[in-house]
Length: 90
Image (cartoon, rainbow, N blue to C red; front, side, top):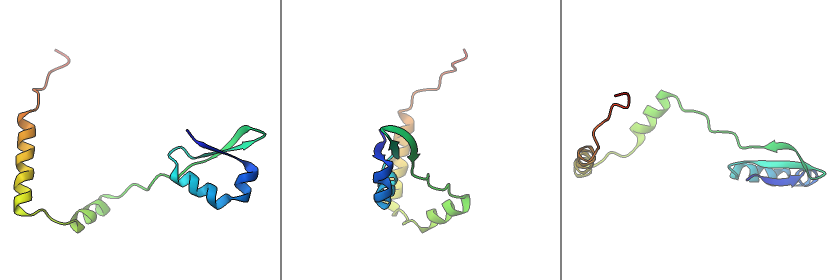
């Protein structure tokens, strides 16, 4: 649920209200005479481009040989435990 503050309180403590909105998943509702009149919501993060995603992957630490082999074994174990696909149209 959104935080609620009066317009007067928001005017007196605007930086604090912005921080509350930023920290909140739902934002802050501004009230006038006890009725909601506006909402301050956090901005969603900008989507990354493919180039940015590739660059962040190159910057990450690499797995050691042992870690990579253990990871591959985990994937194979998971694949062996998958249920067969069913045709939902049949």
